[in-house]
Length: 512
Image 1 (cartoon, rainbow, N blue to C red):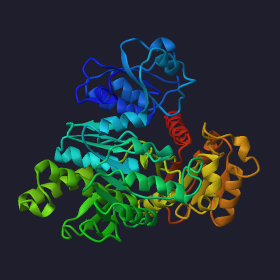
Image 2 (cartoon, rainbow, N blue to C red; image 1 turned 90 degrees about the vertical axis):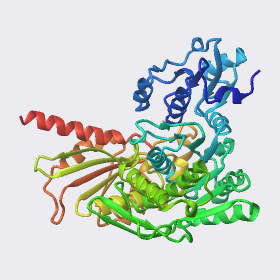
Image 3 (tube, one colour; image 1 turned 180 degrees about the horizontal axis):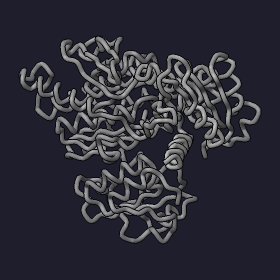
Image 4 (cartoon, helix red, strand yellow; image 1 turned 120 degrees about the vertical axis):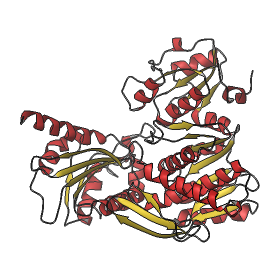
């Protein structure tokens, strides 16, 4: 049998790879990578429509429903999502009968990472956006790379970009230690906090995973870590005690060195910031939140490492003044072009209500208290005079139970809060949490924490639709200039925003 490295060479012409769970965001991104390498691709999933259907359609791929008949003899490897089990899925069972190798998505990603100078973007928060920023800068600098993000990035066109195979950059996930299959030469570490409590019951458990990941770096590898995140700083310190043969590159307001953020301001829907490397040069960013200034600085650090390596230079100081000016200007242009990703502070629509006031509908994947706080703060800075409604749906009972108090105190920067039932995960049984945690319990705690804010609970998402639509068509409170509706969470409450948009269209059509 061939070794798995044979399946992921830079040229996959004529090789048939089958994907089980092809509509998953990471899976669709991996499909794009293999497609760029000219593989023959097939895949299957459930019938429900996802935004990745459009990505696959652009590649001429139509997913089929699960069936053992999809496993043909010419398939050289089956890649499957961790959502599916080897002994349960009919295609995986059939592939094993035919002695066709079956490997997890994370393992496939690891095999691809062996074939290039690879960089992993990791952390509890900010992985997707930071990867998108890295890829956008790489595209502008024309560094020969493939970049894979965990969502559709607007400046990529899809989830990946492909302009060569010398470098590979990927979002790498800590859940179930999936990132341990990756082979990084550089790592970005954005944050380390307690999360995925079903797999990491304590902070130490999840921190140990990040420590082990950092220790995968080779001699002279680079750990680019956020000096503003206590968990990342502590984790970097532990890695340093184990591995003093790698380079530690801090970034952030509390950093020392080139990637210290010197200043950050917001003006007219843009962020402006400077870093110590070139204190007179100002970068611009069109996405909100101080966390995205940090993410951008991490992206600058990594892309400079790759750019210098590609040019055969050891440090930024080795560049000519002309080269320095070029890399800074192109990086600034890239950051200015970056407009976010699917479900990450995504502006879904802007329209005028019946009174002529602007309504902005935004969707965001933030599903951890820290992410909620920083995201809402970012939008409050961008829209200081708008009435901000946060609609949040918590994801997983275990996370909600472990961080209940933190969730219930995450909404300081919005004017109004709407909550729903918990969006469960297939990996947990809701009955195990009866009487311990629920959307109703989260609502009661949140309402108690914010007695001066309007706080509502609707068990089902669309039960809130009529109320929200009436609300955004009310006369604005004094001092407010328009509405912002943000649907937040890893669940499917994004449907509320779509329903509100459709209601507005119907209203406009009926008034013609």
